[in-house]
Length: 70
Length: 379
Image (cartoon, rainbow over all chains, first blue to last red; front, top):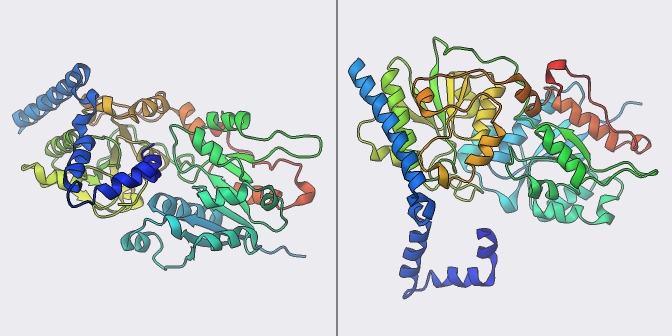
């Protein structure tokens, strides 16, 4: 889909605009923001946060266990 | 009268297709039939660095083909076959014309899948104009036969011919050890897309560091698919590379290291392979290396490849949760699953047999037969 957008008239216009001395910098900043991991709502979802917490806790337990062994 | 050895062109343009081409070349050379193999870089889609070319084709013996040269290779009669893992747009365009397809002396196009394809519909459609298509797992062959193959009529055989297999999916020649071998290192095989977020990759880095601390007598290698400045035009671009992320973790143990060695070099020294992705898992299994697939990394909900990966490897016995991964607990792969996924090792000979049949008009009606394979490899 993104490849199609890049090849489209609109995509080429946006790309040209991104090199504009006036509008280029804010447009590139916006693009970076949209590419950020947190731009996906699933990143903030309760289920995802719960899963991440459980995984981090499992790793922390293992690391503590390794620390106790040495 | 002796027949001339077929001249076969192997196309490549990036690291994935180059790895396919070099593997296919050695399979064709190993086949008990003469064939002249030519490597051909397709210029319009090239995305290879000096290092990658030197690593995989150190003698530098390959042809460079632009669009007209590709058309000439297909239609000019210099090659008996073009074998490729990617059906480039221009090649598909040429093959979509009936006049080109039916012309005598044209090179037969034998297309493989690029690798494990979680969403094979598009890949199958792109290959429908080829002369022979090799697919896997077996369920994908059946789907292709049902949806894309033009069925046989009283005068004409069905086409394209459907084969089973891929050079990266040869049936393992040895069974992985049931317990961790005494010697050898632990490798984490990374990939560009999964895990997808920076914090998920940092988490995997910390997991590897924890494993390294627990196993000070072994080295834990983070095997990079490519260096950060490579593959910038690759289909799968890496957004968060491990070397940069490693710089953010201050207390990495000395026995945790990064390497950009080849897969073959890594597997020679691997006691255990850990991966989140399919391609590395398959390479490890094929070489009989004990394998852990880990899909419970952070932000797995954001990764569109997790669900299809889980489906594909569901009955493989290889998917392990974090607790098992940290304690290096693994199990050998399920034999039934292996036989649905991996093809017999005589793939090169099978391709040459198919080519022979495709180029023999008198026998064109007969489907090429594969040599009988051991019962363990049958469904």
